[in-house]
Length: 409
Image 1 (cartoon, rainbow, N blue to C red):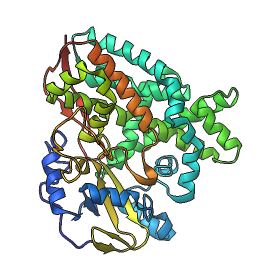
Image 2: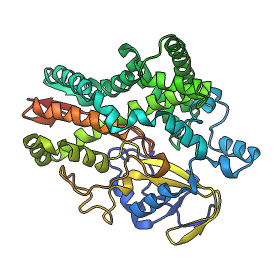
Image 3: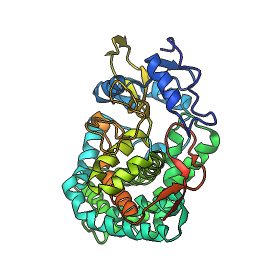
Image 4: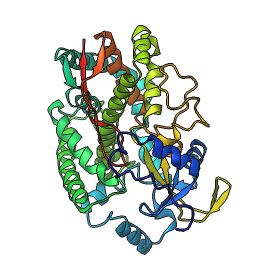
């Protein structure tokens, strides 16, 4: 299906300026309702009710495999430029994020107990101590790039700790993750494709080596959990690599972006920063608001696996929808005064972590890390101000500052 109202002219996520301020374009999309984007080959949903309905409907799937023939699937992958990249196709395009039904549930169940709030509480002390030390180092500089000098070094170490991987390897894994997931942006250039395939191959080789070493001395870490799941017949050997890679991808870039977005929100709302500094007990609510205010993963897709009604209209099997979580989280129909950052906002039923079967597995870990970071930063400073303009990541797949200069006292 390719006929229908087109996306507003203002929606051009590759255009200069969109990354820094996408909110007017998202508002246009919400006003338009479901609309067709010819370049993306999908219907865009920006209203909270529509995005939530699509995300939670089990007839909506990430992969077209359940309703297409092998030839049709090959054609879809060629059209999306998701072909001719053997490592990416084998180890990224088959992760639990990209599959549905029993396979998705099987892989998710293999690691879910590791990501419950109760299980992660055992890690809180280490996260707080590590993050406080990183904050002390950055604050001592007086002026620093919040992203490069502070945020970028934290999530990789946290997820690496869960998997018991060497701390010095975290920066390289972060870069591999950035290069790999960038190819999920609708703009799939040949240069991005080459970087994504090379990064996936290097990441695969690294993980194969670490898995072989871990097999000789299993522990209580997440990588050992995956290896035990293989021994029990729950996961295949490939799926151990696939899921380790996907969890590391998720644990790196998106949390860095969320931290940068959170800092940018506080800088733009100094009154709320002062309120939070004066009342640290608000931090869990403030972190939830950081995710609502600027979702680090603003865009995902779903296919209709059978005819389904959305927004009062029947859509045929195969219809592809683009879910704009960031736009939905600023919908005035769902959130009072949505363009205002409100540290104590309640209720705050945002969908920055997605919704439905594919809701983010690491949301508890991400929030815990954010609470530790901003708690330590506000406790160790009396003033935080911008020290120059931020530079934002381009594209639609991720939202966050690449650089965010600050000065502190």
